[in-house]
Image (cartoon, rainbow over all chains, first blue to last red; front, side, top):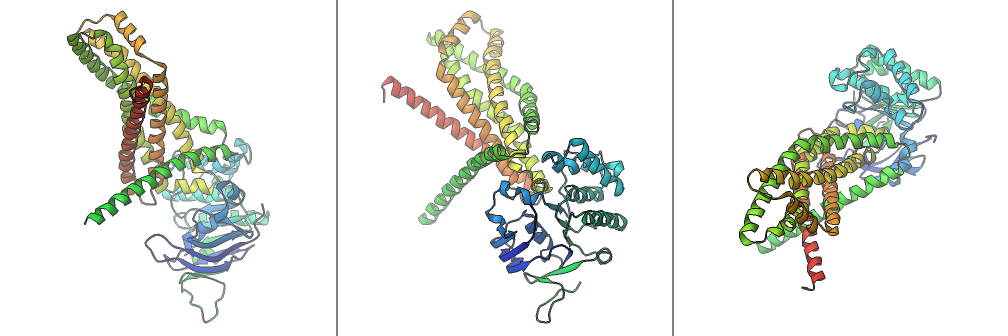
Amino acid sequence: MKIQSLKFENLQFGFEGQDPLFEQVDFSFPMNDIVWVKASSGAGRSSLLQLLAGLLNPLKGNYLINDQNVAEMSFEEFLPYRLAIGYGFDFGGVIHNRTLLENVSLPLAYHKICSPEEAQERAEHYFEILGASKVKDKRPSLVPGGMRKLTCLIRALIMEPQVLLLDDPSVGIGQETSLKYFDCIQELRKAGKAQHVFVSSFDEQLMNCLPHREIFLDCGQIYLDVIDGDKKVVSL
Amino acid sequence: MIWASIDRLGRTITDNFDYTLKVFLMVYLSVRATLRDQAQGLRTIFSVISAQIYFTGFQALPLISVLALASGGIVILQSSTNLNLFGGAQMIGNLLVVIIVRELGPLMTALVVIARSGTAVASEVGNMRANREIEALESMGINPLSYIVFPRLVGGVISVVCLAFYYIVIALIGGFFLTKLIQDLPLSFYLDSLANAVAFEDLWLFLLKNTFSGMIIFVVSCHQGLSVKRSPTEVPIATTQAVVNSIIYVVVFNMAVTSLFYLSQLIKLGVL
């Protein structure tokens, strides 16, 4: 299932008892690029990525993938899209009763994308590149937070998704590992995978190393690239 | 003042009704998700089911044994002493079937399972929610209802049925030998009396009560665990609520089944 478009249509979203994060947003997300999601803290960057991953549902309006409304799909109907979307958590998200290696190879093994040996090999390859081979057989509670974060990031890549959503990927893993991780993404992009990458980050140094476009979140709206004078833009 | 009380009562009733519907809906959704999940193999399901049976069933055996021996011994001792006083010693089997097989067995087992495993499941699932593990499973295309809820539900039901059977056997047989230390009660007389008292309906009653009790305990615990939003501080609240709700539902269910059973017996006898 090829993902060609991601759109918000009159979308509204917010958490219970809080001001809405998005209000009547109509937005067509730029595709085939690395997109840097910029906003001030608390403006809804993580929520935006979770909405795009289908992990949160809008309160009103529609989130359309290939012009199909995600809210109207059952878990099984959305599954082909879900498998084409990789999501890197900003914190948490590792399965605590599995080793880091099992965490990473779980989606491959569960959906029988490849044999268990091949899944393990693929996961080990990433652990080696990113310098985490030593801890790959440990449970999450026995490793530092950065390694848990790295595990989530590798897991987002392992399915070689079409859409990659990364929430603060560089926090906690160090500059060098972040750059290596983005090298892996570029390798995938060269191979025709991970074509649509959305990165929420405050790390300008990292983002400036990558060719990217920018979207801005402000006052419940999403703006693309350079904004005309009438629209407010957050300064970062 | 009165209207406000009536409003409050109405709200409580509708809230409870809503909660009950949600809990039963979760059973349906977890079964449906498992049947529709093409990827989840039987191996994955069975590994969780067997783990659940080990923790809920096997590890509860010592506690159930102690409770069954103690409660069985007390009931047999009291029944035989009092029945002898009134000259109805041959009725001991009937009394034990009514008290132990129909009532104490299902209820005591359910309470033990709530205390040991209901709390464990609610806090485990709640912590998974707080640590964003449930979200992670969803992001990997793994349905938490088929991966987390269904195997625990099935494992829990099997464990409760087996534990209740074990409780009844230990209470009736072990309790007898415990009583034998204090009072002389012939084994053949005791076994004959029990065999004459057990009816086919007792099997249905046993299966109905224990199957549903098991289902209630594990679905309520999973539901409470999944109701945790983000904060770890919600986990103990969810766990406590799981215990309270499970006890209420199990007791009310057992009471309702017993009432309906005796109502049907009275109708059969032509009293009603």
